[in-house]
Structure formats: structure tokens, C-alpha cells
Length: 275
Length: 337
Image 1 (cartoon, rainbow over the protein chains, first blue to last red):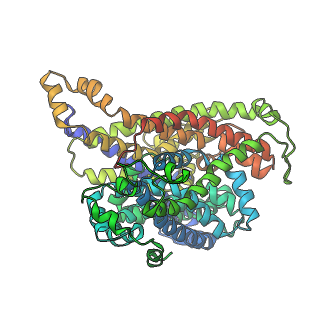
Image 2: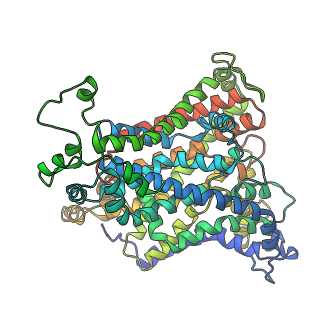
Image 3: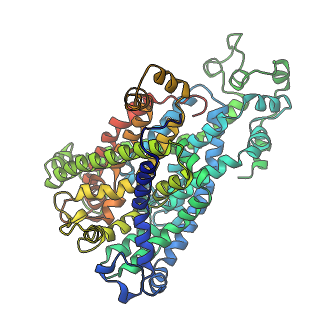
């Protein structure tokens, strides 16, 4: 539906521009503050552009968060890849091999996805401890993969449901079974689906704070968002360092978003049932 | 997990079955066995006629996920419920049964009353901002505006950023001595002076500005998809019947995007119950911005009052059920997800 509301065009643009300024304001403040030298960090000149551009803030922030940034990469990339492949197979089953009760199982998966993690954190920690995975990256990757099962299955189920059954039936006539159908018919046309799911999983795992905080409590092994919070929590750190650290932590997902906005949007709409 | 390896596990195809059937037979019928003749054989074969061939393979491939979800989600929930009924209050595990003692303890805490008060304030602020601004922005973007992509990208940009980053930026903006206060003072409002997140009374509400800044774009995107789904004929029909624009929105558009509004209520409501990251960064004095999730975290991992933490976590689950159950009931997952 495209409908005109009886507002003058300039007013529509004015309201939109004001909102956009509001949404850009924190980014503006982060960028200008991060580029200010120490002597420029005066609260009365917070909104002013830096008199000279200084990378001191970035250098100090990088020195502090670089190990955690690397941790985040080492956690997020494998977790996003594994959970996407896994979700693709699960989605294939939920969409194309619906056995008796599979819809109920799918519903129970979704139901679990909504529940707040606080209701499962204590047993999670005990279980990871029992298997010697507590405080390890492998433990955090496993946790992200397991908690990613519902959303990735949902996204891929929706994607594969759009592929006509006739295509699979043709494969079956040629003697393809469960795995060959997946490997030779679905997988080659799954790349757009993979892009959406990978992007979604990468963003949510990279931006996670709670699970990383609980599972990797050791500050030197923690993911980058935990490190940023630690920097922000200590009042001795200057604002330019805080803002630089926040920007460093935000950069990967911002770059992904800006370069793949359309896919991002598709994931958002498909994953509307996920909080 | 090489796919080629898995191909070799695939059982030999039953050629008779697939050849003798017509081409357009759908997956379920074909692998579901013989729909015409009543299934014969053992009890298992009779009750699970689908459990053979490729359908069995599919089930077995799904099985690890089912087991993991059963343990990591449902098993852990029950376990948390059990922990909330025992006397585990030190770093050492203790499963001595105390019944509802932890729950009574929780409900009588001053801090718990703050949690519930803040949940109401935070929920009201967060949900209303996201839904009102999300809808307004979607309607405005739906007016054939030039540069719609740019506007939409900017509004959605905060959603790509973590709650921690959002919180750090807004902590700077909400500094009483500078930030937004200074901006408004510069714009001529001399007396503009709020404590924002550090306000003892309204701190929880101030935090929702940051949360809504991050989340409104998502709600906007959902509404925009909803608006685009309304057919022009419906709108034209209303026009022909003489509906003005406001009537059109009041009686046609808003009711038609009700499913989106319902989703938005559930998503923002869940966000309010579980908010943790944002209140960790933008923490106000005393319990003024304390939320259930933060209380749970501190009790469990800071003070080792594990049973109390479990009670809070379980309570958060119960609160969520009020939103999730009606939501999943109302959502039909047909083909197309």
C-alpha cells in the first residue's frame, strides 16, 4: 500500500530528517569524541568538532581491547558458520521432510527461543563445568550454536518452504535420497539463505554480552563487548578512549550492515518472531 | 561434516516406490508409506509408518538437535526451577530442599519491589516509544519519499550495534553536566537540566530512550513490511466509500497491521523483561534502575545466592510465558514460515 497522507511534503521530510538526526546523534558524538586529544575533552565543548584530530584515544582503546576483539572473532566466526550449516539441515527437514510430530517439535524449538536466558544460566554453567568447557571458547561456541538451533532452523525453514516440492520430486525420480537431494538440489540454491542466516548469527553472537560474560568470566578471554563494558565501568578511563573502544566493538557489525543492508533487512523480517 | 561423507550413509533408494508413483506426489505422502492400504506388521511399524527410508534418515539427522534443545532449554528450565526450591546460597552446590523459602524471601525483598516497579516503568516507556515511533516512521516512509533507502538505513543502523555500545554512547550523552542537557541549553533552553539515567525516580525511564533508540528501527521495518502488504484495492474501496485519511488509518490501516502491532508488543515486552546489557552500562544510584535480570546476575554470580538467582530467573520465564504463549498460538507456521 502506498498512500499519501495529507501532510505537506516538506513536513514529511522535516520529520524524517529530525528523526534521522536523532538516530545519528550518538554516532556523531562517538566519532568526534574518539578523535579528540586529551586536552580537548572538556564537557562544555562536547558537541564541538575536535580542534585537532588525534588517534591517541583509538590507540589506547585498541591496546586495551585488541585481545578481546580477537577473542570475539575466534568465537563468532566458527559459531556463526557451524550454526548456519546446522540450521540449514534442520530447516530442510522441517520444510521438506515433515514427519508426524515435526511441526510440534518445531513449535517447541521456537517456544524455547523466546525464553529469557536467565532461566537457564545456572544449569548451563554447571553443565559446562562438568564437561570442562566452562571458561573456554569452545564452551561459548557450543552454547551459541545450541541456542542458535531454533532461529537458524526457523530462517532456513522459511527459505526452503519457498522452493517448490516439484524440484525435489524430480530429484527423487532420479534416485536421490535425503542427503543427495540436499547436496545436489538444495545446497546450490541456498547461498542467499546462507548469507541472511550467517549475517543474522554473526550479528547476534558478536553483539552478545550476557552469555559471554557468564561463560568467559576471565577478563582477558572475554569477548569484546564485555571488555567495552569493563572500560566504561571504570571511571578513570577518559571519554575518548571509551568512545573509541565502543566504535571498535561496533565496527564489524556496522560494516556488515552497511555493505549488506538488504540481506540484513530480510533476516529481520524473517526472524520477526525472535527477540 | 563433509556432505559427501553423508551421502554414502544414505540408505539405498527404493526404486520401485519412486518409479511406480506419479510425478507430482508430495514429499510426505511418498515417504509416509502406503496411504491406501492400512499399515501392517509390528506394533512399531503400525504406529510409526513414516519411520523408514528417507523419512527415518531425516528424523535421525534432526535427533541431535532435538536432544540438545530438550536438555539445554527444557531440561535446564526444570533444573532452574528445582534450584529455586533448595538451599544453595554459597559457592558450594547444595541441594537441601527448602520448598518456597527462596520465593518468599524474594517477594519480601525491598530490591524486588524496585525490580517490579522498574519493570513497569521500563516496559511502558520502551514499548510505547518503539511502537509509536516505529509506526509513525513506517507511515512516513511509505509516502513515496525520495531517498527512502537512506532514511531507512539510518533509522535501522542502531539495530546493528550492540546494547553495550549503545549504552556507552548514551552514558556520555546522559551525563548531567554535558551531553543532551548541554545541547538543549545551547539551543536556548537555559534551565534544561535532567539527571537522566542517574535520576533516582525516573532513571529507568531515561534508559528506555537509549533502548528505544536501538530497537525502534526494527519495529519500523516490521510495520513497513506490514503496510506494504495492504492491497491497494482495500484502500481504494475505503476511499470510494468516502473515508478521509484519518478515518482510513483509524478504521482500515491500523486494524490491518494489528498482527504487526501484536508482534511488536511481544518483542518489546520480552525485551523489557530480559533487559540486562543496557542497565549494566547505564546504571543509576541504588536500585533506581535495577531490573530482574541484573538482580539475578548479581545474586547468582556475585553473591553466590544461587537459589535466589534461580528463583528470579524462573520468575522471568513465567513472566515471559504471558507474552509467548498467546503469540505462538496466534502465529501460524504454514509453508513460508
